[in-house]
Length: 159
Image (tube, rainbow, N blue to C red; front, side, top):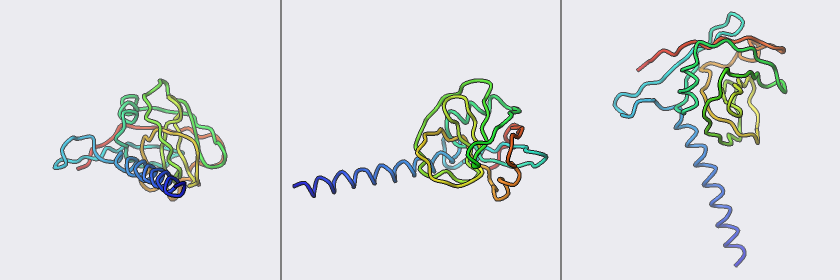
């Protein structure tokens, strides 16, 4: 009797993990409501004279972030894997556990802390997805080891 119960609980847990992963992927779909006219929203991140393009996620937090642009933020290094800095205003959250942070992920920690990750690693923290840098292969080098000032610029639409 105990074995079937444990199997059921384990199955439910694994299903919920897969479901969270799929919902995370869905957040990179368009802001338009019809599948015929999908748009991706992009914004520009300038770091030490390097211009990077990022794709905005489809979250309320990302939509609110765009309203704050253009923004210049001083970011500090943490754990040799991320840069973080505060936004001028709090924005709404939709926290989830990503389990794995990927190089180039742009997240919100709490309601006001913008985080850009330049390494891939496992995590147990909760974040709100804001977007992803499209080509992050040189991000660690661009970010450097100390504080950095970044500029976020308005998005461009691309069909």
